[in-house]
Image (cartoon, rainbow, N blue to C red):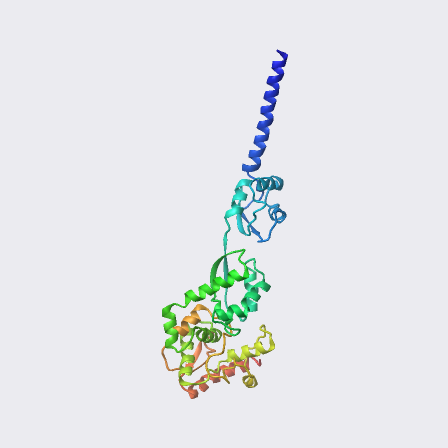
Length: 347
């Protein structure tokens, strides 16, 4: 009888122990293990992350990092870590978190516009995805890649059409560049290519002119008119004489793209540069900035008029006064020069 009681007690104890262990295992896997107050928290896992790296990133978000690590090992996540942006929801269990980190990489929105160089673009993109500015700049300047896809050192900035795009955060430099080439190729439809051809321009030349339009006016509703002025000058064989190209030539020569020049002086017009449209006919060899889509569309769909000149309208800032003749333009110009002098704008 005594032996029987011992056996029963042992069996019950064993069941209790097994139950405790089973509960602990179940709890470690399926019980909530987060400790933040918001509805969700985001973690950015680098592409080369180790389990130690993941633990450092998750430790502020979970109650018990040890149980997370244990379940991660059991589910094989420790040896198959994937980079990306992931959303950890409040109340998630270790099982939920690991399933999320395995397969629910969230895209991020990447935006850029109006960069004046690929170096500036690289810096902007590096703030938004995993790729650093060094690797991005190397990819942007890859001469073999540029040549293979119809670009060169002057036109390379034109490959990147400003907009907001979705990328996975862990996109590398080559992946970003490849996507941008596809977006560029997608933009240049047969219809747009036909419009460029009617202007007797290549896509690269359209973008170069669009960059000047971009710099000349901040008003999108005026860009088609400004584009029409430059296209009229090109058709008549007149130099574009665009001040923004002179400013860019100065920046390019000095290597300082942060230089602020509010007034172009006569001596500036003598700078020897293929970008100086006071000395060289046609559009520059490449864009002087990254034009908005609205500026590119303005060149493809210019306003039909006879204007050959324009100058800033100080009575309606942001807009311009347009003229068909030089005499009319010089009269319009008086008000702008007077305003510059009144404001003591010397440079």
